[in-house]
Every structure is written in C-alpha cells, then in structure tokens.
Amino acid sequence: MEQLLQQIEAYKQEIGSIQPDGADALEAYRIKFLGTKGIVKSLFAEMKNVPADRKKEFGQVLNEFKQLAEAKYEQWKSHGDSAHASAGPAIDLSLPGDPLPLGTHHPITLVRNQIVHIFGRLGFSVEEGPEIEDDWHNFTALNLPENHPARDMQDTFYIHQNPDWLLRTHTSSVQARVMERQKPPIRIICPGRVYRNETISARAHCFFHQTEGLYVDENVSFADLKQTLYFFVQEMFGKDVKVRFRPSYFPFTEPSAEMDINCRICGGSGCSVCKHTGWVEILGSGMVHPKMLENFGIDSNKYTGFAFGMGVERICQLKYRVNDLRLYSQNDVRFLRQFTGAV
Image (cartoon, rainbow, N blue to C red; front, side, top):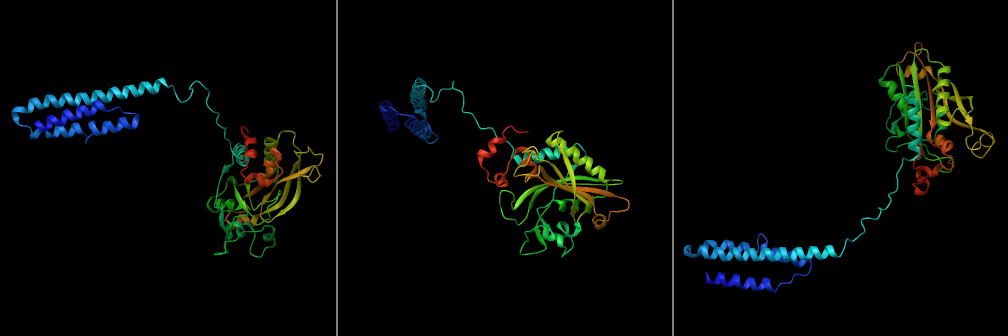
C-alpha cells in the first residue's frame, strides 16, 4: 500500500514537470497516463491487492490522481486548440475556389449520339455486336462468298490462330446477326468501331467508326430509302443542304447508290476536302440484295428492304471542319477542349 502511494506521488510530480510541445507530445502523454494500457488503468488494477480496510483510502487517492491527469490533458489540449485558432486558418476561406475544367464528350461520341437520335425519331432502334467477328457474318452471309473479288475492297485484319476470325471491317455484321435471330419488320441502326489494314494518314486510319442502318418490311422501296436519308442530312447539316445520288456497287445491295452533299467546308466552291468538285460523298446505300435475305430465311418475294452505311468520322469532319482523321485518336487536350459545350 505504501509503495502504491509513493508511486502515485511520483507520477504527480512527473505530470507537474511535463510541458507538452505540440500535438505529438500531447498524444504521447495521453497514451502514457490515460490510455487503455496507461498508468491510471494499471493503478486501478492494483485495487485488488489493497487490504480491505484501506481500499476506501486508496480509492480516494487514486480518483484524485485520475482527475489530475485528465484535467492536465484537457488544459493542455484546449491551450493547443486556442493557439492554433489564433494563428488563423491555413487558407483564406473567403476566396473563390479554383475553377475546375469542364469535361465533354469526344467529338465522335457527339456525332454518333446525334445520328442515333435522328434515326431514333424515325423508329430505328440501336443494335450492337462483337468487334471480333467470324467470316460468315462479316462476309459470306452478306453475299460475299469465298474468293469473291469484292473482298479485295477491304484490307482485313485476320487472326493468325484461326483465319476464320477477323476484326470486323464494317458493322454490317451486326445486321447479319439481327436478321439471323429476328424476322421482319426490322428497323435498326448499328453504330460501332471497325478495322481495316490501311496506312494511317490524314484521310485514312486503321480503325474508325461506322453507323449502318437496315429496314426490312413489306413494300419497302428505294423512295423510302431516299426520303429517310434526305431527312437525316437535313437534320444533321441544315435545311439548305444539297443532295445527289450516284449509282454505285455494293455486294449486299442492288440497286446501290452513293449519296453526296455539297461541301460544308467550302460551301461548294471547291477545296481539298471535296477535291475541288464541291461535293463530298458521305454514305453508301441501296436495296437489300434478295440473296442476302434468303441467307437468313427471309422470303425475298414477300419482303424488301434498304440498307445504308456512313463513316462517323466523315460526318464529324463536315460538321466540325476537322481535316485530319488522326486528331480523333491522339487525345490532344487542345483539340478536345474545342468541343466543350458542343451539341
């Protein structure tokens, strides 16, 4: 009992001599005297060893010591808080915050979303498919059998482990997959990324984006195709846009046509983009080939349809006057910032 009282007296003197300097020293004091394994707790644990006739006396001394230790801690803590407050905040909270740069969609995404919205108003739904495709859905089912010369129109990335698999060269493969599982009426657009083995330049890239459309139903005519595309270009480029159709060839459509609009960059007067003709080709189109319908068990005597496909980069080029395709994939912040707030 006498030893415990002497220890408490020594601890009081130690507390009286402590002058904590800073938060770390204050925390060290708290742990040493008031922590779960601190001196106060250990002294209370000694209560069981005190003779019964002196427990009351020891309890009073121990409570006084605990109150002293806690009071000193609160005193030093409040003194430290007031000193910190008097020093003032580290920053001036009345100043305006730093402006955060406003993000935006990529220009390709902006144009893609607009295309989807325009055709959505005509009842077209969006379909997507795999970018790694098999030969059947990418070529054969689209009236491009093996050794067909039209396959040379597209330089294809084949997968070496299995030459039957490739990176899709167009999103027409999505149309094939839809006709495979769904019977007419079919009215879809298929936006997505495609790949072709081409030399990268200002006018070509090894990957780009397409949006293709397909409408199959009874009594679908070329007039329906033309009116659909007229509506699209006027919504995309304005009511003053001029349009012309030129006969063309695509294996999966017959008859086929390419659609040109007057150059939106030079206004039709002639520039490098339109090759000084005043016209720019923006998409290919045509009536779905009967053999393609038959490949998917669709009666070509009952159903007809039209299809079209456009490069999103080309539409983006004409809308935003971007002359270099490489800019779309270089992630140059100076280029992307120009589209903040674009709609």
